[in-house]
Amino acid sequence: MSRTPQQRIISLTTGTVMATGLGMIPLHRRPRAVKTGYIVLPAALGAGAMLIALRRHDSEPLDSDGAASFAASSSRSRSPAVHASLPLAVGGIIAGSSVLSLWMDRGIEEFLHRRGVPAPRLAMALASGALSLAMGIAEERREARDAERTLEERVLATLSESDPVRLEPGHRGGAPSDEYLREAETIAVILRRDGAIDAVMLDQVWEESFDRSMTELVGATRTASLAAELTAEAAQLTSAPSAR
Image (cartoon, rainbow, N blue to C red; front, side):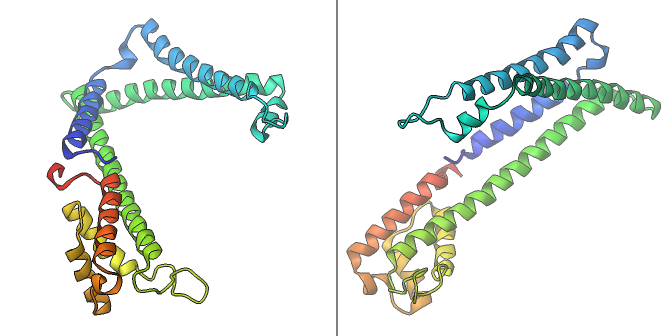
């Protein structure tokens, strides 16, 4: 389900504020115990999660015929060394990343000091917040593009299945599978704009493409039913116009 603009703004704001706040903390100047915990605890959690995942695969039950699934049988064939090395590798990667982040934190702060920046931690915090905001916006745009493609694909599938013009798209001897693509794109624009489509709008779309309304081709009842189905498809993927 799509998030409302208010939810998106709250998410972006929260992420930006948290990133900015964390950027103000000079991790490399914390006590040794704090730095050790920063390195060891995430690594231990990651290694533990991997170990639990491996054991869960190993304990996967047999199927109804008494044969193990492929995943379970392959996991049982792993040697004890593999079971030990995978969690250690995950923990090592996480620990190494933490050490690298501490090193980078100190290096960036010292670099800014040498450059005469009056408040290096503030500059780092603002940069961290800006980066978080930029990444959040980029992710929002990617999700929006995916939602647009998904809506058009679902509208196209619904139109192809209904096939008001009897073109049999995707079937042998019929039209190409994307025969109704132009109509699907037009309908998707309407659905994203208005959150719904009715029989009158469908008739207009069809008249522009086929010089005949959909009601003329399939009748008023089927046209209204298709409009309701398309509106329901959009409701699962996009927010209502009032939430935009």
